[in-house]
Length: 409
Image (tube, rainbow, N blue to C red):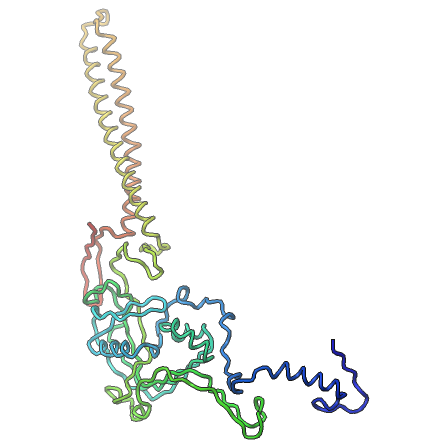
């Protein structure tokens, strides 16, 4: 333990207010505590990446809802070029789930994009932690975590000059054209202009007494790395609100807006974005696992057959019992009088009682089994509606109406 005794003389700064021996010890301790880092610049200490251990990961793709207005500046140039080219031929359909978006070149939606010039705007996005990364750049967030950890900050500087808006705002499967089995969303808006995407905190340290000055006039700065750029800021200066197209060199895609495709036909074997197949009932009930639903369908179908089969057997028993009863009763009534006893009288009586019992028993079996079969068939029909194995229903669309007949065989 190091003890320091304060002397009555006025205090001095640094080590001068201590004895030579104590001063050497304390100054050595101060150097040891504050002077271990011998490499790097002052700004490097300022632009230190936040610790990823401070975050719980709740914004990861697996638990974060897909944003409907994601930035696309982190996309590879080839993919942004493909999206830009595809948008010139019609509305773009995509498969979008979590942090993954895929442009479907074999699928398109009805409608076109119309350009609307805007008053020129600038926007800056600063990302300093993974929560912000997954919120603002969800599609490429997984590949940027390492860069964020190393640099401490990701930056996007954008110049916005206009938008391409879709002529339609809602879509269902009938509005799609091509191979669209995987389509989940349609791009309804494209923000265009120019951007620069780079790393680094721009931490400037001057010679003044701001942040740990290192001598008069001394300064340092962290290096910045440009990750992607597209469009020319100088070309964007000439944009006006009356433009029919963005200025040449200022049409880079910055952000897309998507809307989900309404499902008219439900394929129970298609997996949901979460990875497992599920079915949602029209009544708004919670999703049901497809495998469990198929088991319930099989059980309901089997019980329906059992119920209706038991009813048929009961009707047969009742009919056989009635015939047996009436025949033997007729034989007994055919006797000339009660004093004349036929040798087969006991046999006729026994058969008549058997026929009566068989008839009433069969009738009871038919009623109970029939009711059970009706209940099981009702359950089977309800489950059928959930998976839409077969249905006939009216349909009204934006361009007309009709009857939709659907079935699976």
